[in-house]
Length: 234
Image (cartoon, rainbow, N blue to C red):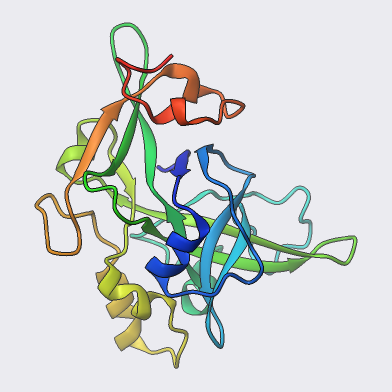
């Protein structure tokens, strides 16, 4: 599961990493992003664009947007066949811009929040996501999204059994492209929905896990303190 994450990169850093256009947006860092909040995602139609999506996916065919189930995660193992996600998997894939995510480790004194990020911290991450566009009751357009999860790698497995799919930069184009659909590109897409490597690669450095303050337990707390190591956190 991925139920809370972090985006510290500036808008220009996100645009550079994903080769996207700003679309008029200038997005502030957020240190404790929770479901139902707007998140920064990269989509591709005629070009790659940075847009905002409400975190909590509502299928395009949902009749009651207000009471519809809002899925924050989709499982990589079933995303191609799940009724809620299969259409978006074919035509509405996106990258969710992030710089890390939280999980909670069970401890004798309660659950300990852990911040998981690149050791290098040089560039933002791209979580595999899906998005949907719907017409709201007031005539406005509502864009929602979900983050795809997979089984945890060795590091994350010590904390939780699931983790977000982090797309390799070399596969951004494949993930965002919406060409003709067949078994070949379906299988190619499924093949990249895998756990993050346990060993460092040239363009995918190691992850690290940092115990942080329980202040992240409340989404109301949103400051750089949220990602400080617990020895320095307030």
